[in-house]
Length: 425
Image 1 (cartoon, helix red, strand yellow):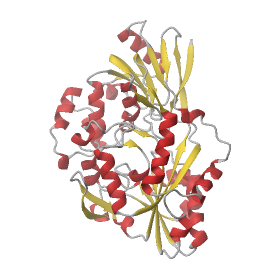
Image 2 (cartoon, helix red, strand yellow):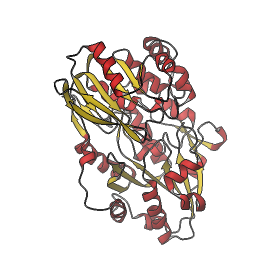
Image 3 (cartoon, rainbow, N blue to C red):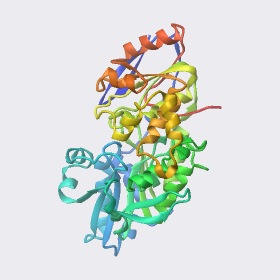
Image 4 (cartoon, rainbow, N blue to C red):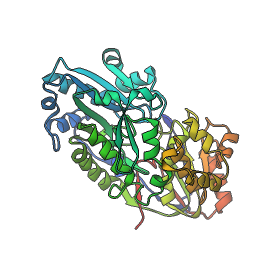
């Protein structure tokens, strides 16, 4: 019997698989990546040697208003480490600068003060000016025309009010933008509901290039880069993380050049050959990304690439924050997977419903595979209305999966489905 710890919230659930059933295990090389320096040293080294740009202290000279865009409560950006270093670097050359920290929520709910203190530390919350993006407050946004796809570009005015725009984030595989980090701080991070919805339209999500690890030809990525360039993002700090959410590498400098080098390293350590199974077990990597069902398609899309025809996918997701967005919660229970996909496919890009993209990806997968959702925070009836099978723990989930696929079913385990890129040869 093999045992695995599957991330769940801030802890883990124990999974047991008989050795004769185990087909394979997929784990990102980031989790075993060896570092010889502290997290702070890694970040300072990156800032001291920017890629494709001047050092941040040089860029800060003579600037009156400086904005730093950071991520919200759904992302594991280690801002307690990175933000103080960025602030120090700026103020070393420009102590009088008016600095604003912008929380890039996209269309997520606002980050609470308690969450901010956990993310940034008390000193930053108490001393710095912090503004949270609200994608639904129309008066906060400026219309900057259209993006390459034809989508309308509305960005938060705070982004345009600064003399120097800096962003921070982390890079991981992303199920339709190719990779997170870099340009995503602006779109979707600091845009309004119209821009985000059009960028995530049914047609864009369905494009063959809109998938994990693909940037070339990806229409979603193309619009994101254009948006970030148009508002003049001059400097980014992006990090790579291991399974403990610790920094293992950092990249600073130009928007595309620094992000690009991070992508190269991440691809080299996280991409592996897809192993096909009758039962595929995965998770969203635990807290903070498994707080709601809305975020969970990220890992299920990885599991899909390892699932044989008719395979069962087991998703471990705490859902401590419930379903997620209200639009997603309404769409995911709108009917059968076929009915949901059919409904969404008829929605024009400019009429895209906020959060429909996750319902679209779920319906695509649910049309081909049964999904067992392991959660203790969503009631069973809600899970069934989402066209999924509820389970309270991994033992129950495996029992249900074996009943569906038979006792000789081959099992693939992907403990953290967000961190892995499963490539089909």
